[in-house]
Image 1: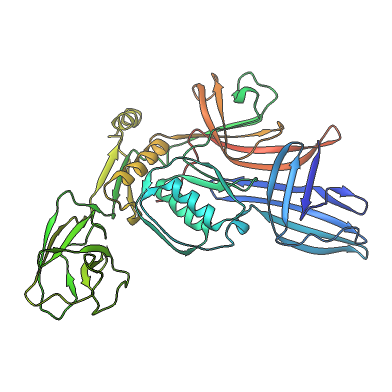
Image 2: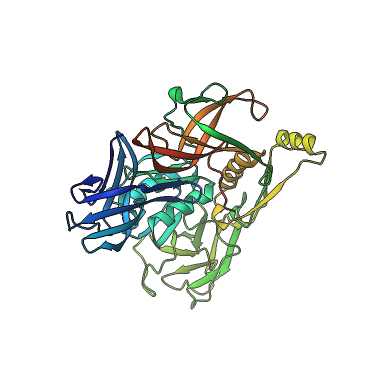
Amino acid sequence: MAISITVGGQDYTSGPGYQVELPSVKVSEDILNDQWQMDFNIVIRDGAVPRPKACSEVIFTNGANREFAGVLATAKEHQIDPTTLRYKCIANNYQQWFDRHMVAESYVQQSADAIVKSMVSSFCPGFTTNNVQAAPVLPEQTVDYKAPSAAIRSLANMLAWQWYIDYAKDVHFFLAESIPSPLPGNALNADTDLTSYGDLVFEEDGTQVKNTIIAKDFLVMSGTQVPIHVVADGTNTTFPLPQQPAGTSSRYLTVLVGGTSYNVVPDIAQGMPGVAGPAGNTNAYISVGNRTVRFDVAPASGAVISGSMYYKYQPIYVQNDPALIQEQAALEGTDGIYEYAIQDPRLSADDTSLAQARSGYLLAKYGTPNVSATFKSYLQGWRAGQAFYLTTAKRMDGIDGQWFYVAKCDKTIVTTAGSPVLQYDLTISDRPFLWGGS
């Protein structure tokens, strides 16, 4: 096996006066807990090569496979003898480089994947978005000096999706990936395959069943409009609106003063008090939070401020799966209903489509008990994020060609027949990366 470990472009694998202690190498990939880490020791004698330095790029290859790539976080120096130093190194994935610039941007209503792609393009130089999947439409998003990883994680949690940065500095944003595994034909027959795996242990978990999703504490646009009617006093420039407006554009409300239509814009301190806007483009500044409309110049005393507006209100959205409930009821002898409440203002949109998408994803992942498994493999090339077909007639009452997803992958180097090879300890699930948010 052609193992190579470089730090900052320097190959430390093995050479005159230096080497990586292969038994110390461990890579942990865990999509669920957002952990992508590599631990390893480097021994250097008589200053044969420069020491490994923090913030340098780390690349671990195994033949044609990149087993890890990221940034050296720490390197702790120990003296073994007067001429020999050992460096205990910890590297993380590329998130440190990904987060070098803060995101400060507002994104109009658009799909979540479009937001992610725009964010990475603008604030994360050197990173790509080839594995960002098409996603539901999100309402306007404002990110106020937030790390890109935190901003994307927030979008993923909003949808019950997942995300990570791979070893080629490409962003993955997805509901379920289908990256093929190293298995021949990308399929594992647990009854007949005697070489690809070992120590297969299945587990069924019913503690997280959710088959009735209740979404609340978010706002949507009303289906009907309410009238705006205020009489000006000739002094004030700011007036209350009857409800919290659904938005700050002409799509959501119209404003007239004395029968003259005004241009509706967000109230973000535009304009100058006492100075009218350009002819034919007089502005009405709308504040959603304050429920007000503001003008540059106080309307004349007795002038009627009129119009109509859609407003925001809090619905309660419920989504369930009768077939899953019936199946659970037959199993338990109960009514089979497992309710789960989402309380998330980020689901606010023009309608309940975002709450519907989030609820649907949760039902797909948690509607029935989850089947997971662990096993070891010496088949080279495994990593978290892969998916494959699993078949067995003897285990778990039979599994017939069902997709299983690699959620966790731990890699260590062991010696077999005198040669080093990677041992993979894998955790797989019949659901795409079960999500623990609320």
